[in-house]
Amino acid sequence: MSNDRRLVLLLCVGALAACGDAKTPGSLADVNSDGAEVDTDPCAGRECGTFGGRSCGICEASAVPFSEYDPNSSTYCDEQQGVCGGLKKDCLDGWCVVPAGSFQAGWDFAATEPFVEPPPHRVRLTRAFRIQQTEVTQGQWLEVMATNPSPFPGCGLDCPVSGMSWFDAIAYANRLSERDGLEPCYRLTNCDAPIVGDVLTVCDSVELIGLDCPGYRLPTEYEWEHAARAGSPACFSNQQLEYPPDLEPWCTLRPEIDPNAWYCGNSAIGAIVGECIELGHTGICATPHPVGLKRENRFGLHDMYGNVDEYTTSPWRSPSDMGDIDHVLVDPLAGLRVGRKEPVVAKGASYASGTTATCSAYRSPAGGEDTSLIRITGMTGFRLVQTLPAR
Image (cartoon, rainbow, N blue to C red; front, side, top):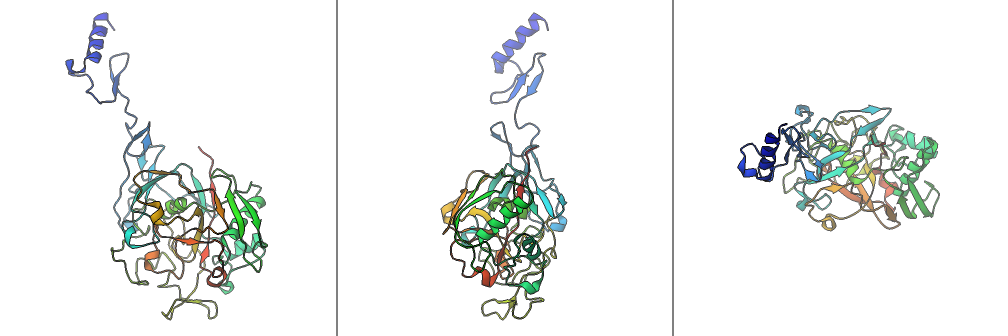
């Protein structure tokens, strides 16, 4: 470059308004050594996510029937690539991969329902994980723990295991980790009964050693919701199923739910006399069913709604304690230690749940010291996750 051209270039850079081709105030464009304009905007080429300390946009999608979904249209953002959508099924040997990224959580009608999250908000999970394709079955539990706590043994070994305390589920995760040569994810302190004996286990405390632990663990509340939604903005991931502000009667029969979940509207099918739970005064005697019979979601997961509620590793906080969320939540957990009397979040609803509970945002308190109804109703089970190494 000649000295004259270099002088003109310096004058243009120093006095932006003097040259027609110079960058305008506030622009992130720059000029290289050859005088060519270079875009240094950290969001250049990105449609979503946070990069270079800046927000590059969010992903939005319409709630349409699952069968009509564009796989690249969702609320999920691949934060590394800065692109929306692209979610796919990646399952092997009963486990499915759920990628890191951000998504929309929450529910529009939160104010009318006490057991859901705050209104829609963004959540960013920085770790990919794999999650069991179905709920842990009676057969899987029996293989590891040599017992079957389920009040529905007649349902069969392919039915979800239930009837165990949250502490028992934690013990199962640790024992399975040890069996597979992995460091357990939890430390249990002062447990007052044998694991899954005649008395359900309760411990003074359980400590999660960290989300990067190599073994198996329960998902956090938001890991579970990310896996259930699979990018869907709708309350119910496989179909457009948004409830009106006044909600619906407790057990409305909805054709959209039937192919996707075992709930109060269909769980009496095949119920075994003496092994079913009467649902109030409805005359319905309901029961869980073998896993994997209902439609899978985009990640390949079955029974994310209905059959049995699922324990998470997240301590319970009421929606009023959470308040309105006006910022992106990053790896929310709410605590690594759970005490004897503290409930945790359960997700997914059960065979006995009403229509409005079959919602990704629905949550309820479970666990804690009071185990009086756990063995009787058998409404709560779980599935495990395992954090994947960073790429």
